[in-house]
Length: 210
Ligand SMILES: *Cc1c(COP(=O)(O)O)cnc(C)c1O
Image 1 (spheres, rainbow, N blue to C red):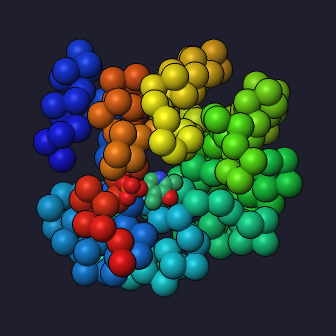
Image 2: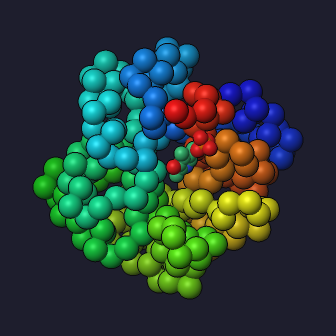
């Protein structure tokens, strides 16, 4: 997307340093196929069931495609998630870590993992609480090693996201984590200015969800 390149250049960053995760939730396989044909390889889905219905066929046709799970993951679905996804962006609690570790052992492979931080400490949102984040991130790095590649957040709606983006970047810096997944259709340019390496954009690409 040209707007990503522009935002990167405006922030004095290289366009190549910002990856687009195209959020295809609620859109059918044809929308994914069209994006693939345009060269888009990374996709985000927030519900594992929906992804499991859509992506095995996509991956059979295009093995280079990459599926990011960006929605909350139930412990009893961890096995399926590890099997299907290349990146799980929503690691946020020890029991889920246990389930992912077990599944990874069983399959002999572990997806890349992002720790989701509840950066606004909102009761209704998933993600590890800000006060617990440092300990949790350290534990996850000790447990999963290089599979933990970064942090993900969704700032509170209807407020300036910039302070929250900056807080996530500071946390990632402190832990030496390269990936910062932040920014959606409404705020990805601000996220890029703050240091996002991955933006998760749905409606600005695929149109408004039905
Ligand atoms: C749906 C979703 C997005 C994309 O949202 P848009 O506003 O459509 O760009 C990004 N991240 C997460 C976690 C989502 O659930």
